[in-house]
Amino acid sequence: MHSEAVASRSADSPRSDTPRTGNGSPSVDAVSLAIIEQLQEDGRRPYAAIGKAVGLSEAAVRQRVQKLLDQGVMQIVAVTDPLTVGYRRQAMLGINVEGDLDPIADALSAMQEVEYVVLTAGSYDILAEVVCEDDDHLLEVINKRVRNLPGVRSTESFVYLKLKKQTYMWGTR
Image (tube, rainbow, N blue to C red; front, side, top):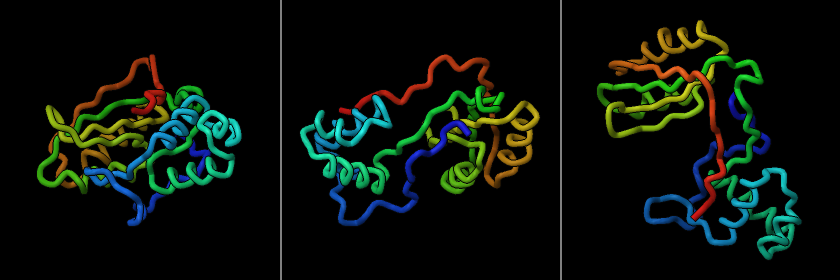
């Protein structure tokens, strides 16, 4: 698929003893942000090298990385070009919904072909990125699965002609 996990992704909700920000997200200190930036540059960077860069021991970095993974703050993944691994069609779906968005967003999130789901304000209630083997596969996903979800009022497909940039290097604040 679009992203293959190289480290475990925690599906569990964050621990209740984790410090939180005002919006309920786990709080992340400056050292953890520096670790995240190191891993964004190279997800395979050794913990010892990260420790040297951020002023911690290898063991302390290992513990912090595991905590960040457990809290769902970050994931460590191998990002591929879908075309090189057999997926010839990508598209963004704009979806309009009647009623509660959450059940539809959850159903979309459970679909193997769906890589990205966001609830939005504007012309669409939900945007979902899909990665498919070919046009027939894309048609099956849209016509047979997405449009058949209870509450889906309409969809609009934005087929990708060429992937020009895909990066996850936006850094931290």
